[in-house]
Length: 234
Image (cartoon, rainbow, N blue to C red):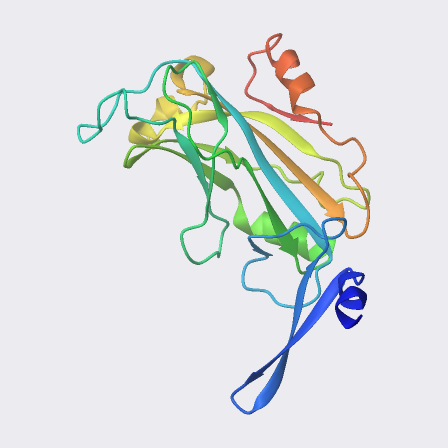
């Protein structure tokens, strides 16, 4: 009977006895509540969760086929490039995301996770200040054992508004080997490896999608009509 009652509660509280005292740990909500998160924003900030920020790397559109590294295995055994995301101030290795790759003929990765959610531990004003101090959010494109290129987001203005709007854009992937060169800084599409489609959504707790939630499929169709690397904000 007690087990049935506990299963009906969406938020489970578990008590652990550690070092002579009880430690109360707030567990994640049920599938209809808060989604599981991989970290906090700003990093290492504690407190109640105010919002959930979801980051999705939908796909990489390659302009040219990148050259394999010298230590790469045979093409038959190689998997597709992936994205490594690490926020400013975050410790550890960050998170790996696996978008689809358009323009590369490789074995698909057995890993399909292309999104990650973060628990926002501050109000929008403080979150906006964190974005401003961070400057840019780099998405490293890895293949084999090296960084091929980096795509960056610098404008987060729509996410911290009173009514946040999803940020959706195709961001140029600059060759990591020439990141400091003048040609790379020009961000000309013809001088990039490709584009990474990234979607960021800020959701309030216990609410559904943010207003104007993005449909990646429709955005991909629209991408065929444009080649501008500028961010598209809905």
